[in-house]
Length: 69
Image 1 (cartoon, rainbow, N blue to C red):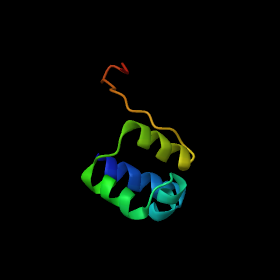
Image 2: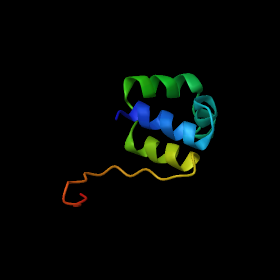
Image 3: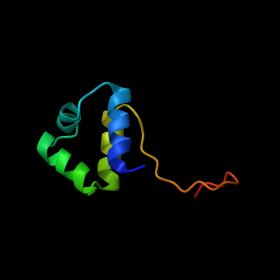
Image 4: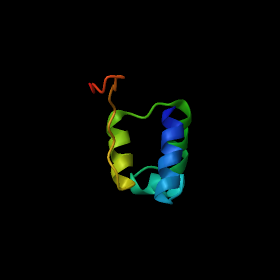
């Protein structure tokens, strides 16, 4: 699943628009849209997005045996 897909799913779950998310994280809707489309969102931006949506961002490797790195 791409970052764009994850953000869209999180927006849907949270019930807010991408434009509202942009305002909450202090950027313009156009800038956020470009970053999402180009997949140039940093880890720090993903953390801000998650916080703005009322969640948390965790990027991790998960293996079939349950190991998480």
